[in-house]
Image (cartoon, rainbow, N blue to C red; front, side, top):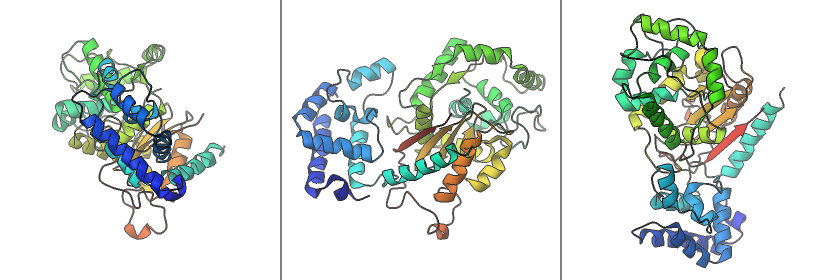
Length: 403
């Protein structure tokens, strides 16, 4: 990516960089971060400089609704960052993070420096697969439980082994616990470990708040009609629950009726995937949602078990931590680079989205993302992180949807 070609004049880039530093310095000098004061400064910039800065950020892969750059894209927005944070119970605007990301975009040192080139390549794969002929799928309950009670407690109740069986198969390990958290039995067991002993409304509030933090402040949705439908047809899941209850696998006072059906769009799920890629730190808010050890444990299980009984073939061909769901949603993590979410409701016999699988297979053929990709293959595949930084930056988010 050559900035001079994109913005036409080196002098213009230097002026934009000075504008970015000026905004950061001005904000840091204030004891109270006020969007009104940022707006005042932005409005005093030359319009050409501001437009160049906006174009540079969009060209680098950022969206105009990115909360880090609200003062730049929406300088006349009456809602302050401070008010938005209070309303959503989220951390206040992180100036240092916003300025650092903005500066890196100008220097071309993001995780994927030539983002438009990468976007074109990914879009070509998408279009190819598209014309080939709401369960969240995340089992995030497992990761919440890992963060809350720790890996030792979680794995007293849930194993770490691929089952080699269908996602809702009626089977347990030899010690009467589910094979892993990625299948139905494991997800049910993991949910029972969250906020044990607390009223249902408190448990619901805790879970939804964590989802919101994973999404960078965007709220998770509860679909009551889907919940009632699932509850009325969940005979096999109830059977799994009673089988584990009879085996003594649940903590005391577990209520199998306390389940929920939450939903989110691909944008939110891609932000969550980027949060996992960034070591548990949400790239939009710079907030640590999960500890590094929780992320490591979660990605290990996603890599070995996240695609149901197709996980071995997935790991061989794609080689990235992933989690699919029978809704057709699939989210994939490229550690230290970024996150994907792909949605296509047609599923195969394993319970994985058909076109989602094909998309990520093609992605792995074209790009050197496989975690075990030898360096000597770098000349045969495209490395979109070349000339970028590989130390925990996951700022570029691309979401794909297909009917």
